[in-house]
Length: 282
Length: 282
Image (cartoon, rainbow over all chains, first blue to last red; front, side, top):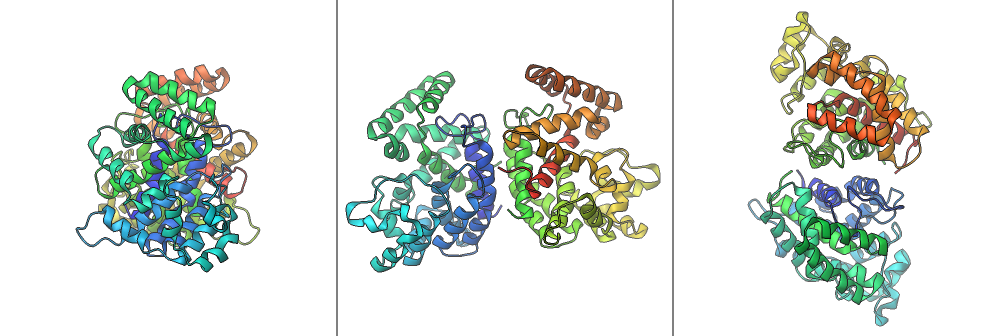
């Protein structure tokens, strides 16, 4: 499969993995966000992912992928996952013969992003309703919620997309991947390679392991750091407790409206790396 | 979405619909054929479907779609569905402004197929292990199980792809769609438009309704016409009996290794028509 196809398959395998406590999966729909919205999001993201594979700038490919993803009625399904996948696809497409996908190769892609990439990133927010926190005080004009209205400020300040994400990498673990060598993405890929069984089942396991290791930053933004830490601890207990504890954990997250979406994004990115390296097959 | 994207989404929504007695769905894996194989099949079919959208001949696009679909370890996942979807995609891409997808528009596409399309159809069998019956006695040299080895016979006899499928339209309901104006495909689309609820749930319902109306031809080929008729009657009882009867029916088909695959193909084709017409949305 091509890099863009592996990215679409990673999005699909991620949402197919079950149980994935707190997130939509193949056995759990929310009332307004359903499994089928994720299927449509993965299909719609295709042209943007292929643009990245063909060498387009990260910002342009990302905006196109998000616009395509948004052609369904569930709202934001895979924004964060695409922000990881687009540079990964671009890195995978640029590999020399025999070169493996590595933290270095994707770091080069994100470090090379430009002011125009940043502008397109802000434009992508016009297509999807993404949950975000207030920006840092000294960067109020770079509030992503302003979408394309913030583009003049991006250009005035001459910030690249890498710079923009570096502004938020302490509060957002997708941004932290960009500035930290995609560390958790590659960790997830390594774990997927170690486990056995159907790929979507391994993805559900790795999701829970990621969740048990670090508090989910989307949960922290929406419910506060204490809740995020409590979810982390309970994920650890669920891993130790087995299927019934995992199921009860899943039920309680749904009841409380707690959605560890960033951890799902990392899982999709890890799946992409493992598929690209041939460490998991379907 | 483009016609090719609607076709990929139709493949995904079809397999996501549950319960779909006798077939893999989002809640039921077989030991060697799993939900994730269908996800990979739908992703891999993309280039072939886009080729059809771009106006390539049916045979060429179909062979490419099947080759792409086969990049997974589950075997034949969506061969029959693609044989319906490729001409439907081509018809949808050729529609004039304001013209709706109709039995006439897709019939024109299949009636216009050529000897070269037939040759590519036989070549497609090289990529996937498809269950088929013996050919008619007077067409032993056109046995699709010979794959590309049958191409010289195709060219000698100057049979078009439409002719080849007409040879089998009494035993195979995908072939019968080609020669019969895609009657059951459009019936399924109309039913999808009438029902309410999530699209994949409607797909599961329409699958069962199709199964209750006519014996599945794959079941007839694999287990004989009596079994196929008995499955039809039990599908009707399941529709009348509600969720528990449907579940028991599903269990028994799995136990008996009975897989109404042709009915699933028709469901995917119906989903495509309904998506294209905007009669269902996701």
